[in-house]
Length: 264
Image (tube, rainbow, N blue to C red; front, top):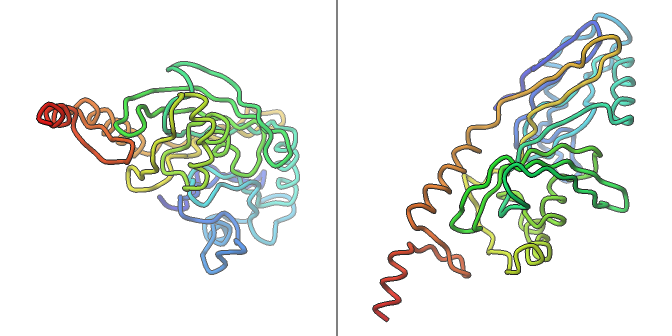
């Protein structure tokens, strides 16, 4: 994936650009040497045709380093103030797609997670799109996630800590933070950590909807990465072929395991 313009309104002074995974949105205190999305913006966005130009295009929100998808950018001071107000009033709507370990329900279920993060209220709307078998975690679930609030790593923390279904390839500390909720949900221990599908985090921003005065809202959407479908298909096929994992994370086939037990 590349930094590219998904939508641009030069008269209004704003745009939506695609942020690839593996790129910081803004300079980071612990990783100052890396290029950032913000550094790329002057090369891909022209100055606004109206209003007061920003000294350089300004991000109006951020995506985590490991997450890709559309990001709203202001190129005029007036647009930046308007967009900031829209975020504060929660009239900007965002949608994400995730694949999580286990399942918080059954296909078609919709519910709201309300669990404070860092002492502040946090709300996420969840819909379960698909549930498939998985040799290691028992099941994998594809979720549609819509954050109503915008706390730090809100979706990742709600999936792991509250639902007990950490996102596939989540960082180990947050994966292990799902232990209590997983046990409460399933009655069993959280399976051992394992990386799937190349190690990339299975969380992607797919849509942002911006309100406009006297106009219809602008909806910018990107396709869900093909690796999501590939992981779900691979997991389903491995399960059907009899592959399982034991409590220590060792892989075996059901028929081979049964034969070994009989021989013993």
